[in-house]
Length: 354
Image 1 (cartoon, rainbow, N blue to C red):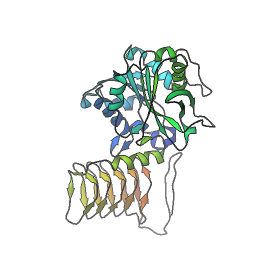
Image 2: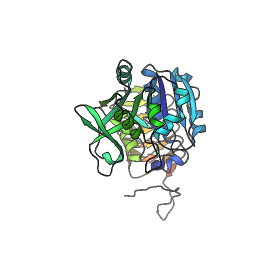
Image 3: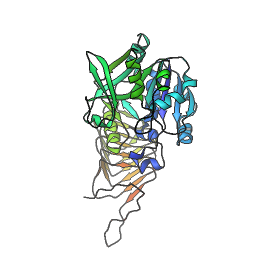
Image 4: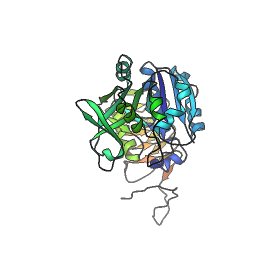
């Protein structure tokens, strides 16, 4: 089998963070989501992986390289425009050939990996296998209707959802999917929908198996989803201390301190992770927080947040929580009077003051 990762798209729901960063490279528990997807495919025994890229192709290439660090071979496939998941399959047809493949959205995180799913599909006679899970807001996803364990109907982002079973961003296909993607027409969104392609297979009697996933799954396309994914992944990490923790500091619960990090006179309450070269001084890092590499946090408190690399948070009197803080951000308290909030914010920024 081959792997196909979709890593195009602009990540508009994560603006302003994704003005300068591909959404698939935003880290969850200090590891880019795209890297987690590559690892999941490799762990399932697939080493030949194509990555469909768009406007952020150069950044994706620089971060991922040739795949050798994971023991896989990466082929980059340029998609002319974000014209739908089925269009991405069409674009990748030359790479995929007649082999079975798994398609994985590059901004999705799923509990438990996909090894069992791949093994199940490889040993079956199914033409396709799709992963479904129950969601609270099915109108935001492609939705499947089942009858006696078989797929009857699929609808993309329905206004009046016929079920609460959403298509997780993981699909398995054989070569018959190319017949489907070459026969469907663009939707009202002017995209070739993968739901329409799967419906084509169902209507023509191809075997499409619905696998209902009961663990957690997160589409990290929005800030709240990113923080939820961070929380869930952190809770599964095994604690490890490779950096320096002085005698005046306390690590409570599941805490990971990566190489070169320094914890000085601070409390870290897990699950939490502190990245390489980061310094935490006279501060409190609360549960479900990821501090990426080469960050300085001094005389401040942070909880349930993600802080990206080379940022500085110094002498903040109130606790920062439920926040997604980008690269090279500086949050400091000025000693000068009169006291006021002074900010330089980019487009689509959001700030909550208490």
